[in-house]
Image 1 (cartoon, rainbow, N blue to C red):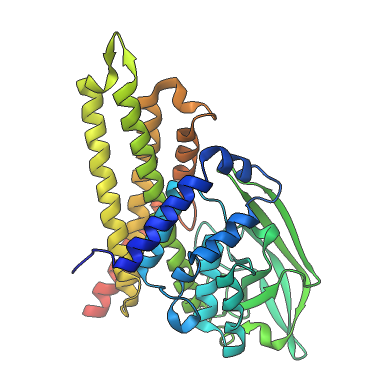
Image 2 (tube, one colour; image 1 turned 60 degrees about the vertical axis):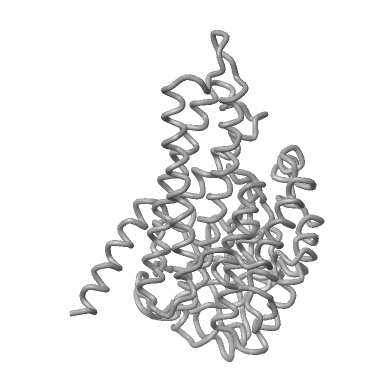
Length: 383
């Protein structure tokens, strides 16, 4: 299989990397990440103009890409710049709408791609421990519409979202795959309450509460109780995006560490000449290449028709990224010495982001268990 990027993808990557280097330097990023808004609306609009958001969507959905490698190329560049703009929410919420929405509901995709609509997937709940099917938020029939009650936790950029894709249970037990439904919820709907706070690795997250929130019947995405496959596809896109973002952050941390080893002197010698550090750096380079292979494998599998193969590739990549990202963070900081812990140095922020990516959409342990469970499913189906 040929894994070389197309000319269009290379041009997109070059344009995005150049834009981030020129307009999103660390000082600017740090200021944006600590702001009350949580991201820059100007940068967000420029991403849309550059075609960054459109590259995440298929042509039939109004974009001009949408393949696994398109997602990987974009998010690797975003990871290098520690970008905090709500691109992850766009790709996950957009995929859910594209997978399950009616023609009328899919009209929302145009606003997402244009950058005029900030969308977010509100799915994670307190105490679920990453289990995708564990949904306690309830949606009940109310006349021709729905009544929504429950809460979602740690929704990235939830305060600034214009539109939420919300998972809610319309039947079954709290951990059943069947009985999960997806809903489109405009942010200004009465009965929706959002409480934000700073995220530890930059930007902002929010708790989203639904208290007797009333929705029209056309707010339901797809069929009642059949939202799990679309949810899995949406989160799968998010997993690939996070893996590619982590890879970009690893590359930046690796480059910063190599530069430090080549310039820092101790006892009159460059510390990069010390054999022990050379060995550690060589091991790190190999691990980063392994992470790249995992991302390539996931990007190649995500558009496949074999659901088990797709999900296994995604869980394998996320487990690898979780382990390697944490290793890169630890080793880079240690090889920098005490200065690696200072907030003034970008490396500390890359290290934080790498560790936190492990905990988004399932950590290393969760995805190792999921990978094994999916393998057992594949074996049982083959018998």
